[in-house]
Length: 262
Length: 161
Image (cartoon, rainbow over all chains, first blue to last red; front, side, top):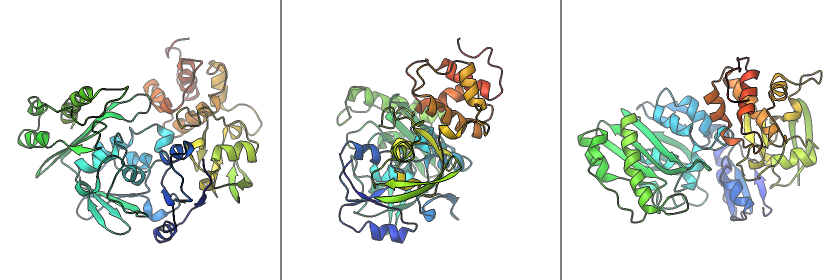
């Protein structure tokens, strides 16, 4: 790793101030950033750790019934504390990485990084979640902007994520067994006003909504409803683990499994 | 460089660390606690698992500065106060849960974290919990068996010898 300074502010305000320095970088749980630093793929002058900020942590239910999760909440905490309110989200959190990774990695870190094979982006997009930062609120539909790209500005911190709780939902991940990232993962969420389907791990553009499946499932919430649909392999990722055609095929397979499990 | 203080295995410890100093390097090089191993240094293998504030974490994927003020337990803190092996450690010996022993510190710490939350895990739960701990010698069977035995369960039917 290149040398850098590290700060551990205890309030959001202090963290925002610290991130105003040139080449400063927020450090969430570090489960992606620290390996990236070891590979010298990033060279911040200062890391601002967000792990000592109590107001960034916790799970609660808002007056409108939405599940609110602090940006610095670990996957393990979400897996344990969201289970009663939003079981599909808790199950997703409990399937990220391994136990030690889940004890450090955070929802805000995952969403800020927007890895194209990460699990949380699928949940946020399929739930129509609201991404709350120190400066503003963004709809998930506006937040995700492609591979490792989000609407976050420099130095902006995700303070909370608000998930409207669906009537039924499930996340199905075809796991890349070495990394436990999604080779393809599909989150299906059924709300009173329609069904949302978000796909991670498949597209070169990162997480996306499969709108044809949403229309079909809004009319008929059954695995058979998507049987006649097909997914183009154009723009799908291809690597040693799976070709674009394979991933396109998995989108439909995992959608059907998610509907069946919801 | 900054002075970092933390409680390690029940004792107040302090040492010098750069911003980029990993917790595992601080433990090994600054505090001379070399029981915690570095296997892959890429967060895959779990040989470096320690407990920070009661939770299992990979000490190669956390900075020492982030553990300022924390309660840290390493494998050196696992034996009983009289120096005899803990139940988990004894079970690893009794059931041949190690061969070369390199992964064992992480296995012990992960096993302890599992049994704290889930005192009577099923074999499937043990295997699932160990997803982040890699062993290249044993084929895992005897590790799983040792953890099941440490939980006080009958292991006569578990896995293969």
